[in-house]
Image 1 (cartoon, rainbow over the protein chains, first blue to last red):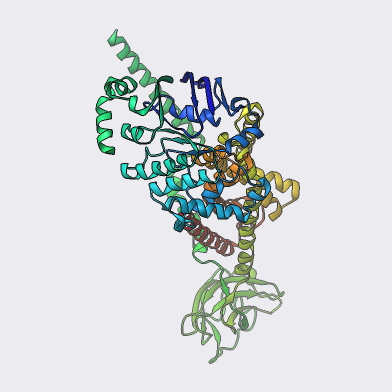
Image 2 (image 1 turned 45 degrees about the vertical axis):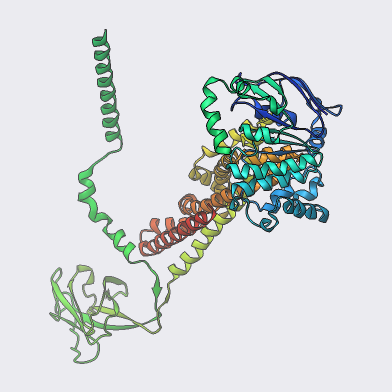
Length: 257
Length: 381
């Protein structure tokens, strides 16, 4: 169980990204976070693994206080939390294999890993992870030689290397076309069914209805909705995205259908 | 109100123009600009330019054959020489002459197209070179000679006119200058290589400390960042020439001083370039690796280094190229290598052809390195 309590983030330049956000995520949920760009979705996800340190508030995960963890413990927490990014965040010049192995760094012997020496079990694990996302044949390709959809699958394989209990996906399909979106989210759904908790930010309403087990919505850093995906009707959506976003919503829903 | 501001603007631009005119007139005066002289004195550069077009590249082993004829000055001071009818011989238009008279000296049936030196051989044994020239294809030459007072006969013995013919007895082979220049240009290339290598070893780790995205975290990191950055900036403000002068005093003239000077300058320059390359990397992979629980060293090794290696290699090759160029200059102030050779030859006043050899060598090496480094950098991007 992940518990977020009164989370507030104010950036040094004064931008208030999150205001007093509280919610809980039970193990095995597929929680989708929706909201306009700049509503605080990315900040929220990054506060959970403390890529961004929250200004106020507390995040606890099975009685571990993430917000108070010292660096060494924070790394041990992070290695159990996989993360998937909108821009994939792969090392473009490195091979797919190297990128996938990077997901294992949190478990590796720090010194041997610097020399690029990996236990054979980790290598097998990487091959399995690549097989799982269907791109084992690309292992020796350079990451930037792959298409966007393939790169995101490398991103998921990298997260799998962590054997995570929780996956944070920050708009994992926003850079991909609708067909690929489904294939990527399908992988996350499978992982979720195997027991991984997923917290995922999304833009498209139909994807929300299709994959989410629960939804929270942010607007200007404030949680404006928490409930089941079915509860988000047209009126709710208008409330979350604002009047002027109506047109955009219509086209995005059509485009992704 | 509007008119006033318009007037103000006009006055202001008039002032700016006046200030510029003043600045340029002062600079014109202090720099002793004289474009008339630039054209008028162009002939003074002729000697050097002609030397530049005739670099000392090859030489032949030669055998010197000397032919001679006596020439009494004034007439009756000594017996005139018997005319020779065949074989290599010298013929004068008059058998003898008074002081300051001019006559024509000709040589016949000598070695064709061969370098010769014409000289007086005085009765007291001293010699005085008149000219150096080349025989034509028929082995003939002619020259106008003045019967100088210094060549007057003494004690009934006339001065002789001697002509040395340098007959080649071997094929072309590299001249001494060519050998020296080849050796020194390699010294220069290795100076540049060595200084660039040492500078890379020093600058690469330091550059991470001077990269804001790596180091500028917390009070300690921030101060380390500013200290390293200031260190690079202070080092960069010293010109390579100044550095070379300092090291030449410290270590004596030679390649060691030059290499040290280049190293110092290159550390500063590469440090700055490297740190900027580190700062411009994609932060995404760093974020991804931090999120997976990697430590700081692992993040640098797997997210930062793969991104910067191409830039680093390109800067290193570029700096090697630059350092070859700089090291020719710092040779002038005691840095050793081809620059030192060049300055020696230019200052000696008689080594212009050798200096030309050095300049050509520099031009070729700089061109080749420039081309290679451009190719390498093209491959890396």
